[in-house]
Length: 302
Image (cartoon, rainbow, N blue to C red):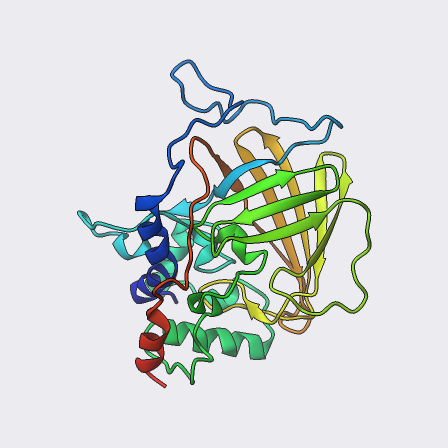
């Protein structure tokens, strides 16, 4: 179960830099060229998706998780002044609706049933969630989210975080620029094979191929890491398959399958769809700048 304390811990770790950076950001309000508009000036999100000169779907643009919800700490509290909306899968990557979150908060849904955890992975997730709820130890930092320590997120997790992502598509790769710590990811589309014995890295190694208008991306070589605030693990044994398509201008469909036999009893699939964001730009979100949270979290319980 995920409590409001968990949400506040999440917000503390992820939003402080985002909110402070917004004040000084440049190009926060700047018109995006080439955007299809309705007569009232709003974005025509249902317009056809753009194409590259080669006739492929063009995924270029600024994106944010589509399944965003209000600040969970304010759910059911009229007058509550909350933080920015966050994608629901940031809380647990297996969530598909706000109703599930509400049930989990009320004790009516065991989040351990959302994914096919191996027994050890379920126990690890329980310990991490207990710490986030304030009812378990930090275990010398082992139960603290690496993202709260300002470590880069993996993909798929990064698709569900509240920072923007800009995709730059070229003839031989997609470059994904992420606001968090000014990080990046490359997805190669030049036909190169995946490495045979990769050194684990935060983003892993990604190679994509086109199946019609869908880009199928295979990723290996990830580090042992967290997939969400609930502490769902992913290991270096994982193979992640993303199926990315753009059915219309304002939407990027992202279907993610995780095959990690070390942490899960079978492969599982989630949707981490994205919505277009226009008339703004990426801003600095440097997590380590004046970071004070981790030492307080460790001090809250060993």
